Image (tube, rainbow over all chains, first blue to last red; front, side):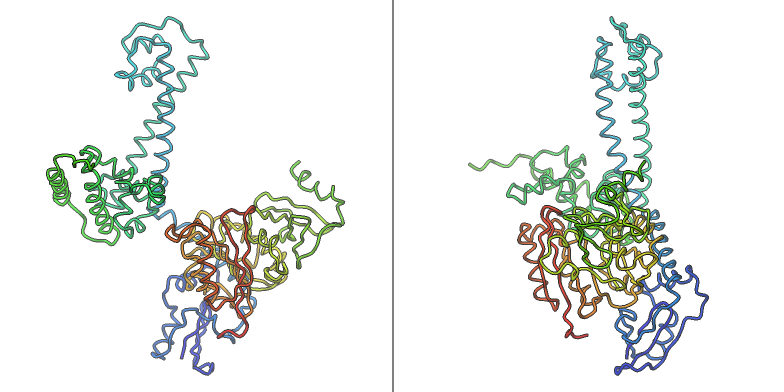
Length: 334
Length: 254
């Protein structure tokens, strides 16, 4: 015996195809009610009618395909329009739900930060070069960070050079040129403010979404890993070897063509434990850290107990131990 | 201004008669190397494609470089109408994206205001793409948008009115052929046609190069209960893609 069902009707059918029992949904047929019922089926739960029939006939199997395998299923008839409206409502609800998805929100923030950072580096370099052309005495290295601020807070270029503590320029820019320079410097300082803002938001959401991973790698790196993997769940299901090389796309595709495997991806390399270690232990530390990060994200995703400070310290001392174990570079093979 | 530009190519070609065009089936025409479908929503283009009037009928251009089904229609050595669903049939489209191809299928399966009584269930997993799909469905009765994983039968079963006469799968996932066989066995009616657009880049890199990946998929299809009718290379219209035309034979176990 099988139970066939759709949103309006549930039926118990015996092996010869005879209808043994039948229950029809008697609720008011509105698109909203209907979409709720469709959502129940889609989510893998049983409609009340199906549950009742299943209680009446405990050995009847509930058909996974609903009513599709039933050749005598009644036609939908005039309800087609309501059904169509309900499917639209359901799909819209699904789209609306996607804003509750922290993965997507984190991904937007990480991508926005990345794009803004790359445009900021270009503009900042141009701003420094531009000002340096006029203000020849300024030190473009030690005063680098002060230059955009000085330009964007001054009314003339002489005022800016005064703020930087050097003599005014020999040749002055024209009025229009100066105002361009001023606005340009303004976007540079503004961009760095926005970047700070975005990164604070990333910290907040990453700490919420992946607390253990954020504690281990820092929220920004944790967010980058999640965004690269395409979501927390995907990161949690990833082998730690894949996590280790996230962000090393080019090196991985070279590896597939025969080059040696990358030791770590961009995200893990940005960890001081990896990048500040001697070259010959970086791979070992990256492998160890990736293993731990992979456990951390699983703890976060599968609702385990959140890692505390002592756990992180334990991991860091383990990393120190790896370093101590290999104080000298390996001998070169001849 | 915009209207004028869109309607002019039709006028230039002689306006009311289309001497060089050949009907493929109801609502689909081939004119030289371009395809046109009979627009179910007059005066509206889905993605800015050309429209032209022919008396009271409006035709909408079906671009073979943007739609794999259209590309396959141009390339197939079978009777072109045999790889398309007929008006009024039930269709399942897995991986509908923003609905470009689906809208053309809708043009001739459902027609204006669904006077053919067809149904197209369009499944898409991305909320971003579904947005466009939903707004398209709002003025195209018969089109059912489903936001969900196209690999899960349970997600689709409540929406489709009966087994499908025609299935097209266009997913960017690994194991496309296995998924296709599973879904076709679940949803295709005996005698129904299934198209699989296989994207080589989505398969695992461990499976070898593009050629090997297409070959693997072909073997999976041949070993299944589906009969493989044709393998259509889409190179030139859609890179790294092959479209397989399959049929579920009438004497199946159903």
